[in-house]
Amino acid sequence: MIELYTAATPNGWKISIMLEEIGIDYKVTPVNLSDSQQKTPEFLALNPNGKIPVIRDTDNGMVIFESGAILQYLAEKTGKFLPAEHQGKYKVLQWLMFQMGGVGPMMGQANVFYRYFHEKIQTVIDRYHNEVKRLFNVLDKQLENQDYLAGEYSIADIANWSWVHIAYWAGVELSDFKHLNNWVDRIASRPAVQTGVNIPQKPDAEAIKKAGQKLIK
Image (cartoon, rainbow, N blue to C red; front, side, top):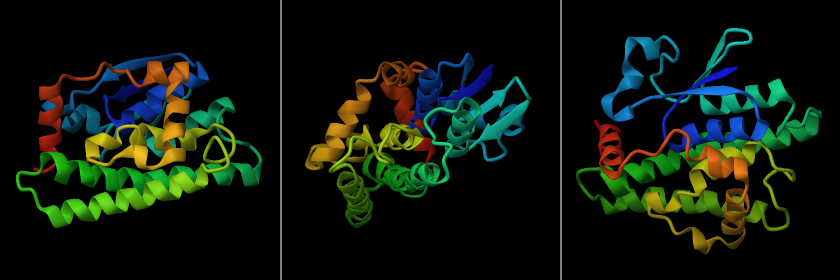
């Protein structure tokens, strides 16, 4: 069984979606970010960086943090959504790293300065909006002639979708990217995605605001 410590955020959704996709037994422990539960000694013993998500595999006792590493671990454990063949594997992993190193950090900063920061600094907002749009354009071109980022549905799609589908939260209009927008809809139609994106239950608006404001302290 997989024990999942998570919250209703893009990085958390990656893992709950993946667990639904692979159909493995798992138990969810919600982490209340508004109350800083991710900074408690108990949680820091699981992830010294104090971030969700984290998993514990009760089959072998392994504890893993960082959402990209967790996705790869679960894919390799089950043989799903990551090709075993060398070339295919790295086609997927490069797009996973594209999300980890680009889409997530840039959207995260856009979220902060567009929605939460106490002062509206338009040049900073524009800087992050432009970078998010540049990254979206890369994804859009990759999807021009194929349904998924690495050809077949994979952990790269799960990771990128978890962030891209809430582009509006960062103040970016997704409909400007035809192929990317179609890909978002295509993945959103998957039953496992529809379930996973609601695990754990999304917090109310006030809790979201409170959690977001903690990002800038």
